[in-house]
Length: 150
Image (tube, rainbow, N blue to C red; front, side, top):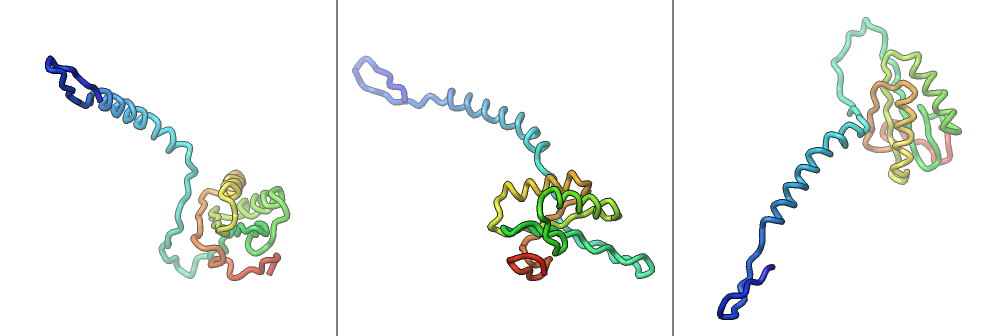
């Protein structure tokens, strides 16, 4: 606050609002410039949606590719992957032979966020066109034993 002395030695307090307004406008301009850049670098994830019912004359639908990420490892359709290289090879093989290149991913809450992002990136690199995140671990895969394969 700025204090202005008058002739009678009384202090008057006034708030100088101009620097506050200038700062607000500068911050607004910075936010407007940076927000499109932030949106371009984000990972795009498509949520699962119900599709229209197809006639039975068409070939039966392919079983979905489901990845379960938990602290014990990564499971691709109930088969435990030994390493990221093993996962990449199996995903490339599975995605390459499919018409529907959608991968459903579910993760245990105990798994670190960074690990899930690494797996998302790996799946995208192997040719997945759509990635859907499932809400609860275990709902899509049934109940897997903690130790490994079922």
